[in-house]
Image (cartoon, rainbow, N blue to C red):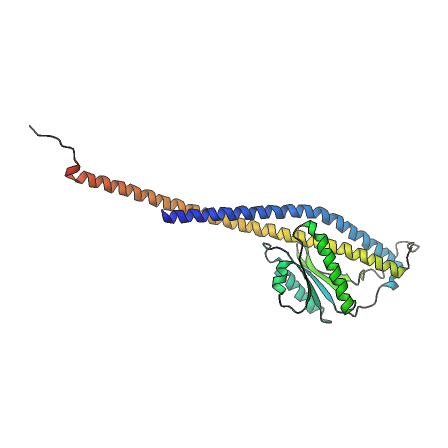
Length: 291
C-alpha cells in the first residue's frame, strides 16, 4: 500500500508541475501574438526611414562619417527569463564568431537579459548589464537604458562601431551593424532628378535621421528578440509537458500494477483464512448425534 501511495503522490506532483508549465506555455504563446502586431508596425517604420536615407544619401553621400576610430561595441540581446532552451548559448557562440571575423580593436559588450548575465559573469569585456524585457510593455524601458549606455560608452571611449547580436529570425542569430548608419547606401542610383528639400543642413539632417533610425532599429530588434524568445519558450515547454505526460502515464501503469498486486494479496489472505476455517473441527457446525 505504501509503495502505491508514493507513486500516487508523485503523480500528483507531476500533475501540478504540468499545470504550471502549460500555463507558462500559454502565456508565452499569447505574448508572441501580441508582439507580432508591434513588430509589423515597427518594421514598417524602420523600412521607411531607410528609404528616406537612401534618397538623401544618393545626393549627399559626402556627409557620412568617416571610418570610426573608437572602441567597437557589441549589444548582446539575451533573455530575461528561462525555459527557452539554448537561446542564450546560441547568442554567445555567434558573438564569439563575429569577434573572430572582426578582430580589429578590443571590443566591449553590453549584455541585456538576466539569464545572459549569468553566462557572462566575470567577463571583463562587459561594460554594462541591463535587465531585459519579459513582456512587450517593458521594451520601451529597456530601449531607454540601452540608448543611455551607448551614449555614455561612446562619450568615454570615442565614437566606434556598434553591432547588435540577437535572434533575428527563425534560422538563428544575426549580427546587425547599427553605427555608423546607412553604410550600404552611398553610391546608390538617384531616383529623382532634384535633391530632397531640406530645412536643415545635410550634416544636421543626417544626425537627426540617425537618431530616428537607431530608435526604430532598436525597437524592432528588441521586439524580434522577445518574440523569438517566447517562441523558443513555447517549443521548450511543449517538450517538457510531453515528457511529464509520459512520466505520468508510466506512473499510472505502475500504480495499476501495484493495485493489482494488492488485490491479489487480499484475495490470497481471504482464501487462506477460509481454508484455515474449513480445517479447524472446532469451527464446524455440530451435526448432532447419528441414529
